[in-house]
Each structure stands twice: as structure tokens, then as C-alpha cells.
Length: 287
Length: 321
Image (cartoon, rainbow over all chains, first blue to last red; front, side):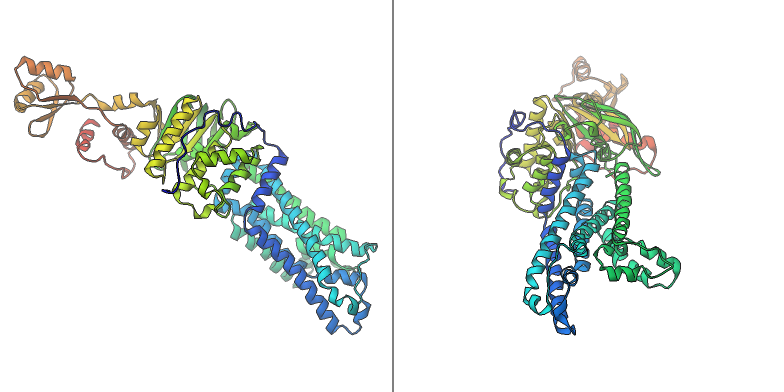
């Protein structure tokens, strides 16, 4: 403290003139959340890992396919997109970490008291955070896909890679990847707001997405299989599947059929329910 | 202006704040005192809407805090020390808070300068000392140039210069006609800073009065007399019904007579006096008396409250009853 000089008190008129009296508006809360988002190190780390994993897995997929496939020169446009988006399952983890920390990190550090004092209606804070995290996750994924496309160019000739944006399935998977990842981020954010503890929220979200969903899909009971279809990640990532895979997933006569967009809709319903619960409790609970 | 009406907060079986009503007025510094766990912080958290009252309500400048369009212009609050993300710089922390109200970089630089944080503003808050953290909290409280300033233990961790800075600052803010509400457990500091004091004990208000009134009330008008004829004077006074103690040879402490009465009694009997003083309690003594009574009243376990140091201890002890 000795290095700090104390400025003579001069609050008088200091600000009634210099700072405009502004009300809290949603765009301003979004701006505040954007400042928060870009001023902590977790953001570049998790978004960097998202790009790195997407590009890395795409390169591995292209390389692996070129060395293993029997007839590699005939990759369709849909196959190409499958290669580019192959890293979604790792990106899912990194955006979950980003989203959970963005909200539960405020509780663990005490920042939430400052945030909710500035915006005592509370709900706009979480909604603005959700907007920032969702857009950042989606744009980062778009960037990762573009970089992945550049990174697989060395194998483009030998594999016959091509991008046909006129193909509806290609477009669905290509746009679906950022959409699904942004939606999964919202799911994680909602759980972070509900549980408040970063450790508990991370364990819950990753536990469900990575462990519970996979275990459920392996258990050979009809009831469990019916539930497994509606688990958030299993349902949502149908948007990223080829028509052949979707047909295979819908083969089981005991489980309900879900199209790609129906699957995404199930994920979206999870998000709406969890976010709604989180916002309801946010208004009721003490900060 | 802060107005609390029948404010209560219960956590399960524990009552943190119990039917508290008070008004904190503009233009003066109101101190908020009470033992640890008396409910001061909880009350302050309810004022800015972080905690929801179990019963009653509290308004700031006429409406509930959350109902204000621009809350930071109404109340600037410093709550429990760390309400910041340690990974963020002080500058970005203030920028983010200000952004919610459209408060820009210029005002942020102003409060950074005001708090003396220029040299560390771009550094991550995680590396801040307790004192720097407090300065950042005060900077955040002043960000919206609020009508009401509420500081919970603002001098915690501050060096003497920082303590003096806070004192000057809050006096100045009150002088500008703002409402200033601050809690502290440093009685000597509060005595220098506050005009009015609200004392909380076990979640209830046990005093709400101007600071001087509180001190006068606690003083009980004990009179110290130094005289070479102590025994003679003691006998004289006791016969007239006064209570007299003698802590040391040649010094009497008289309760029940004013200094004038003691002096006249002595003069009437030709007793020589070397010193005749009316005891003035300090705020600390007044406070300890109040809170000790409170603890006694509830007949619970007596908190290990700090005993007043030195010569004041026996006096306080003898005047409580």
C-alpha cells in the first residue's frame, strides 16, 4: 500500500456532470457481460482449445481416412463435412467448460454480488451471459470449421474432398455444428446457474453428456433405450448425423424415431426447461 | 435515505435480523455497529436486494433497490471484501460494472484515481492486498456517483493513511448531502467519522441515536476526585448517599453526584481538591455497555468481547450496573 498515493478527496461534482445518468438496459447488460467475457483468461483458453481440437481432429480424420480407406478418392461432399466436424465431441467439452465457468465462476469468486448489485433484477445478467456465451461458441465453431477446411487441404486431392453448400444435408451438418455447440453451451450455463459451484456444475454436465448418456445407450432395456433417445446430447447431435446414420438410429422399433431437427428440438427443450428453472430460482434465492 | 421497516431475515432456525426498523438520513454519516454475527452484513445485503427479507421491507431513496432504473446511481455499496473475479483487472472490473449503466471509461479512470489505484488498475485483482481490494470496492461503490453510499467495514485492511482517507471521504460525501451508511468494528474510528449510530445486537436494534447522546448516556456522570484528604471526603459523600470507590490512594470515583456537588461538598468541609473531573465515556465504552446488556438480557453464552484496555476497565465494570 505504501506505493499507492492517496488522491485528495475530490468527489465534489466529480461525476454528476461527467457521467451521464444512465438506466440499466438489456444492451448495456450485454455490453457488460461482453467486457467480463473477454477479460478473464478462461475465455481464450477454452475457445482456443475448441478451435485446436476441431482443427486437430479434422486433420487426424483426413489423414486417417487417406491412409486407411480402400477407395479414398471418392469422398462425397457429406463425407467431407463429416471430416471437418469430426471434432465436435471435444469441442462440446470445451464450450461446456467455458459456459459453466462464465456463470458459476461468478459465484465461486464473489463477483456475483457485484453483478447482481449493478443489475438487481438479476434475470438480464444471466440472459446476457447466455447470449454472449452462445454467440461466442457458435462463431468460434464457425472459425474452427473454416480453419479445419484449410488444414485438410493437403489431403483434398487424394480424398476427393469437396464442399457442396447446395446439398441440404451438407448445409445442415455444417450449420448444425455451431448451432448444437452453442445450444450445449446454454445447457451448461443453465446448470452452472442452478448449481453455482463450478465443480458440481462441471461434474454434472460432463457426467451426463459423456458418461450417463453413453451408459444409458448401452443398457439393453427398452425403457432405458427410450429415455436414452431423449438425452440432451444424444438427441441434439442427431443434427450432425448423415441420413444413413439417422436411419440406423431410428431402426430400433422399440424407441421413438427422431429426425435430425426433432433431435435438436429435444436438446432445445432441455435448455428452455433448465434455463427457465435457473431463472426462476435466481429470482427467488439469495445471491 | 434508507428506510427499513420491520425487516427480518431468518435462515432456517437462525434469526439473523429480527424485526428491525430504522432510517438512515442524508447529509450525515450513520455508523452501523454491532458484534460479529449481529446481522449488520445481512441487513446491508437486504438493502441492495442480494438477500430477500423474510418479513418487512427496505427502501432506498423512496423505492425498493431493485425497482430503480439506475441502481448504481442510487446506492453505491461495498459489501464483504471480495466481490470481484480475481482473474480480471481492476480496470475491467469497473468497466464491466459501469457498462450496465452506460458509465464509460472516463468515469472509471476517475474513480481509479480517487481510490489511488492508478498504478495497479491494469493488474489482475487476484494479486491485490486486502487494502487494495478495499480501495477497489470503494471505487466501485462510487462509480455511479450515488446518492447513498453504503460501506461494510470499509477500513478493514487499510493502512493508517487509508483509514484517514476513508474518514475524509465519507465526511465529504455526507457534506455533499449524500446518505452515508457504514459499518465498522473500530470504535475509535467510528467516533471520529459518524454523526449518528445504529447499534445492532443479535439481530435487533439496541440503540439508534446521535453519537454524542449515546456517549452521554453511557457516561453515568461518574466523577473522579484527586485529594490528599480522600478518606474524609469519601466519608462525607457516602453519608450523603453517593457511591464512592477508590481505585488508588488519593483518588476517588464518585457516582451519584455531579462535579459541582462534589466540589461544593468539599469546599463546605474545607477539603483540598487537586483534581475534579467528570468521566466521559468513549464510544467504545458506550458500545460495550450496550452490547453487554444485550447479551445479558438474552442470558445466552457471553461472547468473548474485547475488554477495554487499561484504566477504563474498572470504571466500565462498575458503571454497568
